[in-house]
Image (tube, rainbow, N blue to C red; front, side):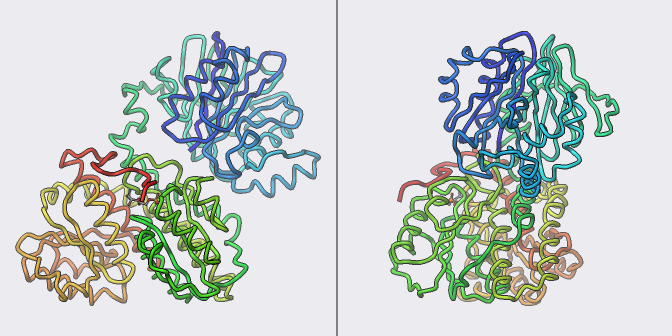
Length: 599
Ligand code: AGP
């Protein structure tokens, strides 16, 4: 995610902002910049690369004078990392400067409108639209102009805006993206997150959606979009910096699980908002190639794409695919999935596919990463930076991206009527609120973990896409709790694995697929009769499963196609709490790296 900061006070602003941006580096970024209001003009310095590149350009901040400024670290979503695409963005005249964290969904229509009004765009970003729109609305009153922006912009944003003719003011507003204001003595600070301001103040305002702040040296005034004054409690921050970087959560992993609703909303919005992916050539076969959790998404993708688009799908781990001389037809689409976009085996598999002339599509989270750049096409998951080694929000957004790919393929084949496209789009937009319902029950999952965290062997079973989710449940548990966990198709147990079931063996059974429910129920009874302890995950109202389960977690009702993906959040939380109860280093598990860039 991008990081935004702002300062107005007695100090030279640039050095203060460089330090504040450094304390937001953990959010991940690829470029940085600041805009300083000298009282006569706004000086903007911005550059691709890390903060030290920016700091060098402005001699640590001493080369740009002024005590009012805004700053930004960019996590690219629209447009590659570059000097031009870095924030702040200014209006044509340079009199307005803006920094932004979020995604403007209606930026294309706004850009067309502004071009017709004579504005000239130089970047590929959605944010530049905000700068010109602000200029278009600005009549000398920053507050009114900001209120006007909230009536027009759609999507997510945390904004800071300065104007050349207002050296003693900064305006700020947010919707869906985080924003806080640090309250000082004769100076005030703005940031995406608390760590940025901690060295100066522990008194902050936590800004809510559509609250507009007008920040001056002598104080901060808050308004609603009708420009009526708002009073707000000051929040005293008693966290240390490390806790603050995790937003007050104990670990990045739980913070990232809690971010899943917004991550999925961002990912789905870019697709549904801008129309399904354009498929020029319909493949006669699809090979999905990935590693680890991304491979597990590929296994789910086989069920999803074959069911929705009726195109045969093969799934390989990249380390196997790259050496097995896979049979590619002349019209095979190779889909590589990777959170980091740098996994060596997956990159090698991509290059091997291209060498053999296959069309390639990547599903990647890190914008501008090697795999994203080298594939013929890329579908970005907009999960934001994922710090914890065990993937959670990226996995969940990859699943959403596979659904969107399947729907795009079906549409290209003429199998998706406008009504069905609308219906599935609406169902995808329901996922964030359904995941929130699961997150609201995280204490129930924590209780389940406290019951089972001493397990020595765990089986995850399921049929159909539930089997694919079982793979991820087993991987998540083993990689952070170090408990031996295996996933099996539920119907496969009787062909050997069931010999391992003995009194007390924990079996996590996913039975979310209506048409396979009875079959899975029989498999659960098989293991139960051999002494297993069973934790079942089913759709609400399937209460008959209680007779052969020790614990049941009920999923909220949704389109049956997406039910299984809701189970991912439960499995991630379960693994997190089990690992935590075992005292493991949840964010940095032994032997693992966030991105495996070696063979
Ligand atoms: C997932 O929790 C693991 N950290 C690991 O399996 C990971 O999914 C795998 O290394 C692939 O990484 P990628 O998605 O960045 O390519």
